[in-house]
Length: 222
Image 1 (cartoon, helix red, strand yellow):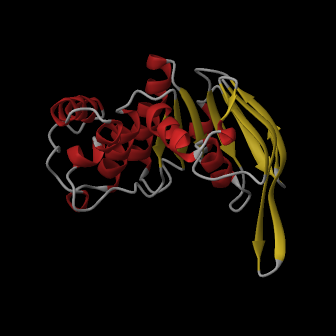
Image 2 (cartoon, rainbow, N blue to C red):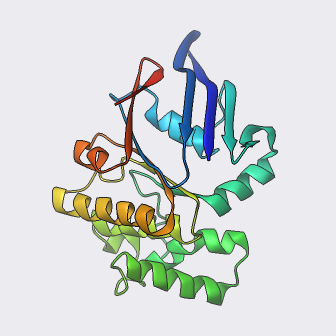
C-alpha cells in the first residue's frame, strides 16, 4: 500500500546541515499495524508528517497505491489528506471554541458533506469512542483522555485508509492510555485500516503487527 524509496530529509539550522532521514526504504502493507520506535529527536515525527503529506522530503519518494504523492499538486495532496489519512496528534490540536462534536466533524465539512449528515456521522463516531454524552462539551471541559478520544473520532470520521498517530498515549495516565491503545488496535482489526504509530510505549508497540526502530537517520526492523 505504501512504498518509501530512498527518503531523505535535511534541515539547515544556523548554517549547519542536519540530516534527519538518510535514505529510508520501507514497505507497509494494507491493514498492517506498524510501530515506529526511537529516541527523541531521531526524526520519527518528521517521517510521520511526510507519510501524511504534511511535510515534503528533501529527496526520495512516497508511493501510495503506486502513485507518488509528491508528484501531485498541493490541492490534490490536500484532498488525499482529507479523504484517506486520519491524524492523531500527541497534543490533540482541538479548536477550543468548538464543541467535541464540532471538532469531530471538521474533516467531513471540509470534504463537502452536508452539515446534517456530518453531525449524524460525528455523533456515531463519538459514541463509538465512548463520548456519546459529551457531544456539546468544549475541549476545556474535557479531560486529557476525553480530548484524545475526540481527536481519534475526528481522525476516523472519514473512514481513512491510514491512521497516523504521533505518541497517542504519551500525555495520558496508564489506564486512559490503555483505552486509547485498545481503540486504535480495534480500528485496525475491524476495518482493514493501516495503523502507523510513533510511540515510546513498548506495550503498545508489542501489540502491533510490526515494529521498526528509527536510529541515525535510518530504520531497522525489530
